[in-house]
Image (cartoon, rainbow over all chains, first blue to last red; front, top):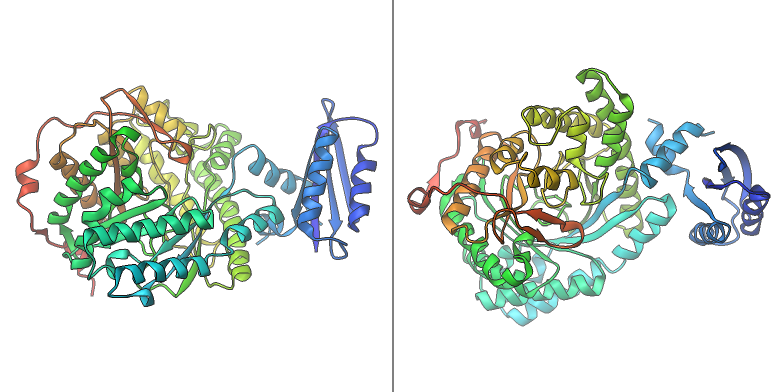
Length: 89
Length: 450
């Protein structure tokens, strides 16, 4: 199973490193990253494999959200099924 | 792999356009809680609800976290209490309502529906006890919702019940007058009531339903309005197509959540209700959808046509997205719960008569409308009779939820999702003699389909 990690915030040095470190702590394997910077705002979409998480998925969601706030970033982790449901028949 | 555009679209629907799951409602049968002893009846009802719905709120919160989509309400609907109340006095029926309220508080749900009676053809002892208890029950509880079905296309209109509900709304308004007649915000009068509706205040667990069931109500007026705005200057065929596509996506999320809740709770999945349910939050308004189609203000000429198209396109888009569609499924137009409707009613663009016309082409009916606090019971009954006739003749659900409070032009406020509404005028001419005749208006010819 996969999850989508979306990161939105003011651009600064080391955002990808911080988010990646969080994923590594929980055992989420990064499969794909796409990112853009628009008007100083950083937007990143990361697809991660959550099959081998070392803690429950809900804790991963909470951790990333809290970690994002301390760095002024809006980080949301969402299970892939919501995107599959909405965009695939 | 996923398309980045799709991911961003989903995220912005949730974060910026107020997409949410409006409610996960667990329907619970209370039939085998029957008892001749009112105390035992109450304790059985309490135990049944507490055991069946124990994990409802936690499950809703877990699903919310997993998919990153807000699930605003977790609710319970129960067997219409009138079916359980054959031997009860009015005081006993009030005790049952208080029992439901206690269970709702313990479970952490915001509403519990089913203090209800079905009297389209006539009254049973149980329905009399429940209906007579409604004013006190709604005044002395916080989270209990009540509904009464007074008509159906098959049975016609029970005008004795219509007359009585005018009086009951009047009494409920009077005894909760110090709280802007809040009791009336929890009371709906129906024609052709659906038995699997997850939305309050009209939800109850119908007689043909299983022991326990999960029904889900989706929302998303903001998403539809934004999609229409993005489409720009295009013809109405393209607007309808845009609404259909958006409704499909919204409903798929509802189906996903319903399926997951059903599996986690070990309870059958009933239906997804396709309704576009507004909230008072700016950007979450059905009126704004109509205005985004090109109306200067909701309520102007053209509003009924725009709403008819919206309602139809929502159903066409949504029906393919879910394995079972039910409940009310259409666009809601509750005045106090919709920022655009509130503005339109305040500036005089939206009248009671226009709202009545609009209800002929969308789901539900005259919903959350504040009328003058001194409106006589028979005038309220007249409004009910008109609205209910629209439902009976058109073989659709219609409903009335009126709040008699204040004077024309005052704002009455109910708090939270119930919102606030300007008091709008009603006709000063009386239907008292017509309402006083009582009896039943026979079922229309379209009921004879066999």
